[in-house]
Amino acid sequence: MGIIFAFIALVSWGFGDFLIQRSARKFGDAIALFCVTAFAGIVLFPFVFRDIFSLLVAGDLGTIALLVLTTAVIFVASVFDFEALRIGKLSAIEPIYAFEIIITASLSALIIKEQLNYLQMFLVFLVVVGIMLVSLKSFSHLKTITWERGVVYAIIATLAMGSANFLFGVGSRESHPLLVNWFTSFGMAGVLLIYIIRTGKWQLLKNDLKKYAPLLFGVSIIDNIAWVAFAYSTLFIPIAIATSISESYIVLAALLGLTVNKEKLKFHQYVGLTVTPFAAILLSVTLK
Image (cartoon, rainbow, N blue to C red):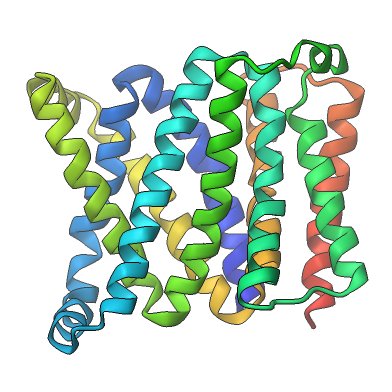
């Protein structure tokens, strides 16, 4: 079941990122992210309100603190991610994000003692390398990577998102996958709503919802399916492996760009497109 959920997350994030790119360019980061998180906050509430009530009545401060920490970390990751992409060069930023898997795997090993065997560690390494090859437009761009602001923000985003993956997994095991998704989405949507109102974008949000409802609802549904599936996958398989398999969505996103946007890939990117799914599939086989 864990493998199935991880691959559902892979496919959903692949299509989700493709739609997120379009929606973010059309509506802006804040509105696009608000719609995704507000959708989860509304749709998931009927499934988790009993868990919320039980959590509050029991006064489980440990679980509440974990959920609050997860919300804060994933919010920071999103903010730095958008800022890195806004001010930095894609050729310098995107390869850094592959190390998100290493962060998640390291935290899983150090904190909850999830150990991978040597074959699994090698396959995780291949996934990281494959993702880097796919996202790297040219090796010559590596020479231009300096400690500019965009790169620093990308490193912070990678550390935060790798930590968020780990916290999502732990939170799902300590409480419930749907509760983790609802809590983080509700918290982020609340902060984003305040920002939208204070910056005078409320009317713009309403107009976008009326005019582009199919796109906004589409990206909201697909992205939230991905996060829910990822959270469920961590109940059955190690968090590091769930992250490695699901993060291979970058390959699917690249294929969508290749077929829909008619993008041209270079030889090393085709190598990455081959290596990454191969390693991800072998990872799933090692769990049987």
